[in-house]
Length: 110
Image (cartoon, rainbow, N blue to C red; front, top):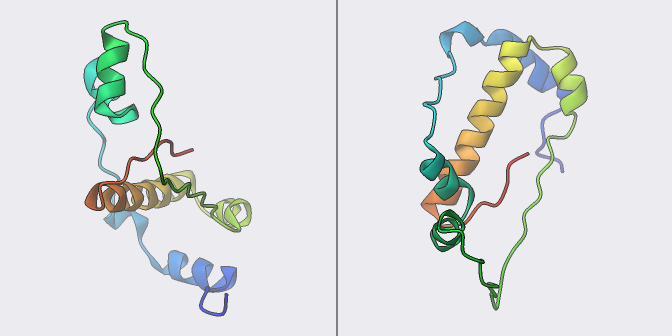
């Protein structure tokens, strides 16, 4: 798309940022129950923790969203490990916030 910045532009912007000014916040460890509720819808987590079979769940309408970080391999080759980690943390946090804001159930972030 015409509005997408080039890799050179992104690299220039990132090189101007002092990543040490934006340290990643360590995430607190989750308990087993909290992790289940984070990974599955509440009714599925409840059934699994009780050892019950999870009933089939049908939806009339659903959307699957796949996203790719175009040029990630090239971009990551020019960054330090902590810069890549901080960048991905910000990206995933923004996606999680958007999903929560719009009451969207997020299946997986890989």
